[in-house]
Image (cartoon, rainbow, N blue to C red; front, side, top):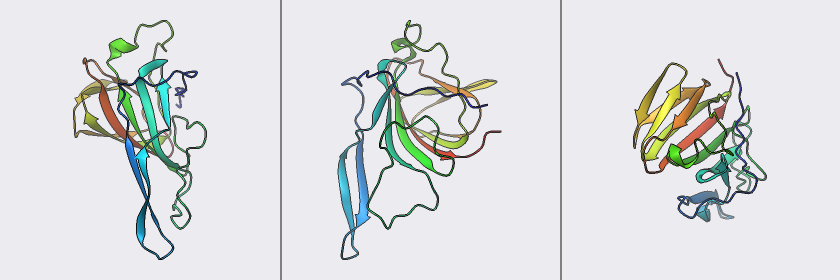
Length: 176
């Protein structure tokens, strides 16, 4: 089952309180030496559920493997990036999950964030706490905890009073 949650929230701007992610990108210069080709704030941010404190920051996307590193750096982020990664590629992103109270119960918020993506996802909690919620069970995750998500239906719930920052790598694949 593939359910698609839209990440675009009709022009809603991320709140100033949302963590900005510094992204460094490497490359090879004309003499064959490794160099930094980018060092700055990641700018590809998308608000979720019309909630300025619920923000996805896409850091890199590619649609084929093997990746061709011989060309100039291309983050693959022109235009919107859907929730699911390309079938033959991956997406690297962070999501800042606000406390559920910021968005649940609002008239303009989706009533359900349960979804499944046709992918293998690696999720690592960077800060805060978050509940990984499945059809049958849930687990509280904290900083350093890792979830290997294998195309199953799931949702995330931040039942605390502080944001939770989670890093994700989604690798395109097939669901169960």
